[in-house]
Length: 310
Image 1 (cartoon, helix red, strand yellow):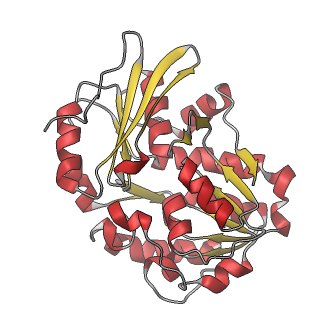
Image 2 (spheres, rainbow, N blue to C red):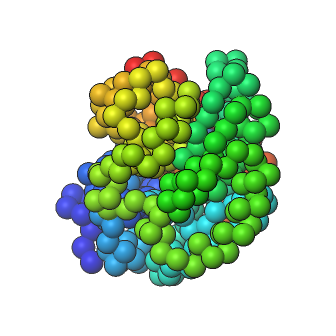
Image 3 (cartoon, one colour):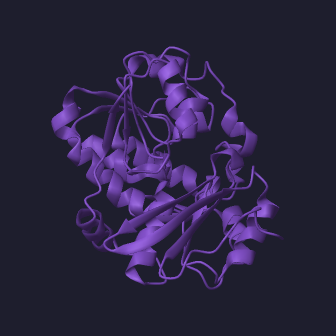
């Protein structure tokens, strides 16, 4: 397979991180950043839901870049200390042998916990009603919100399985995760997570009353947008991957505040898979870092949630 027109390797002295995503190619980006004195090229290449194209891109770039991010899919989710691997996603990355590959799950479990703690002076979590559209893929955030005393509805069953069953406690989420994830991870991930053109369509109506109830909508940008009603006036959205069109969408729907857990780099906020790959490339290691190592780097580079009043 040929690489996208105009694609270039990173200049000498730079580390190159490439996220290959099942998501829309309309969200592609290439930005430069310097982290702790090390210059980086951070790049995102979408495959519009084409799993064959994703596999070919990984194989073509394996060994040519410093770290891969896996976008638009999770290789695994970490829930209640256990790691559940999606079998079909593991096949998509089976051709990667030389370049470290990260899906963001390790950083979600640290960066997003830290973000909830850092946002306490602004949001006073005990006063907030929070809808997490999907929690099992961001268990660190889910636990941190519970620990902070927020009133949370975890929407995994409502939005992922189309059953009107709000999960109201972290204990219930743990029990459901341990029962459902061993089965769900054997299914194609696009059955319950939007990829390709599905990321550009919405399914309003499902769970509208929970959107209306909540003060804060937390979780994956595509998930939040996909099931959102038209009227989001007064709402805060807490997420990570944001592009200029996403910001426009939020303003059009009346969102009052956008908070991102990852920093804005150039025209966008990159996903946790890109940030995790960047940290691994920065460390020089060939595999995911420990929670303590991620936290140390997060604090060294002074990553903090970015608050945007819309």
